[in-house]
Length: 369
Ligand SMILES: Nc1ncnc2c1ncn2[C@@H]1O[C@H](COP(=O)(O)OP(=O)(O)OP(=O)(O)O)[C@@H](O)[C@H]1O
Image (tube, rainbow, N blue to C red; front, side):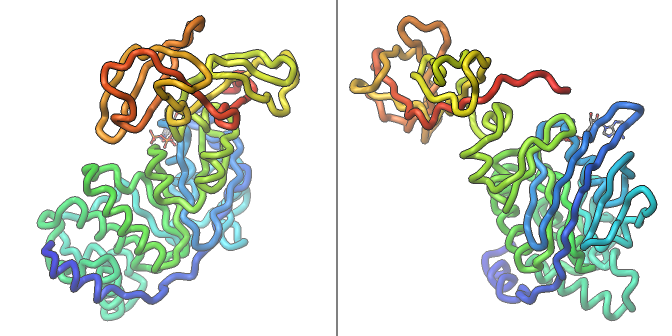
């Protein structure tokens, strides 16, 4: 798109609120495939108007949960409640089209033989044709693509197709928009701007959005709250700041940043690590602890730090440098991520410091899967 066209689009984008935002709750959802439990008791509510990201590694159950919300999959136990009304449960099952939801799933690509406008009109069959055209045009304008109405999908870039898919999902004015890895097909440079645009459109439309992603950074950029999943369970739910600053366990800490990981046994209310001692919080003496220190929390300086160390290797990554360090008298290697060019070239012997509050201490996980 040309800059002028982009500008024109931005000016013609509608700014009126179009949706009544819904609340969607999962209540103790369980689900099994062929006898294997893949969702193991998830309770979670997406509040009206919020962007809730379902985040977790591959196989953690994110897509299954979204499909259950949509009514494409039926849970084996538990209820889905939308605006206080049961959408599915032991006695009720509302099909997807009766739930007031919009879907943006990877497998619901645009129809290649239909124009952009007809693609967007597709979900508006309940409206008389004239109204459907008006609603579809307005949805297209909302994503800045009003002038592409008569084109076919193949004539659009990947990012533009993505925006058409968003327009199609939002055209019926759903109370909740369910999005499954919506940006995974886009190249990384496009991703940031499409994601930001999508967020703008979501805010304008005021729909509640539940977005599946396996990418922690993507969730941090988009979410009002993140629900972190692992092995079909909810590990933690909260704002980006809450999950980053107060991760519930080692898995949650490691999901948002690279960490150094150590084992320790609590003694005298403290844990001892190669990077110093730290309070063990509520953990009793004798407890086996997992200790995490983010790479970015390891401060490295030529002298003056608390611990002497030697640089084993150094990798320049542009803005930052990655260091592998050895600490005298300790076997565990330590890694640090520091601002590039902070240390003089050729420097071998350094000192390091970590603030006690940056040493995160958790009870060592017992295997629950
Ligand atoms: N149709 C199916 N039949 C059998 N098993 C399935 C089916 N769909 C999902 N599963 C299994 O359920 C578990 C959760 O899958 P799900 O796709 O929900 O995870 P996910 O977190 O979305 O992963 P990904 O990021 O890889 O899509 C996995 O172990 C998966 O193999």
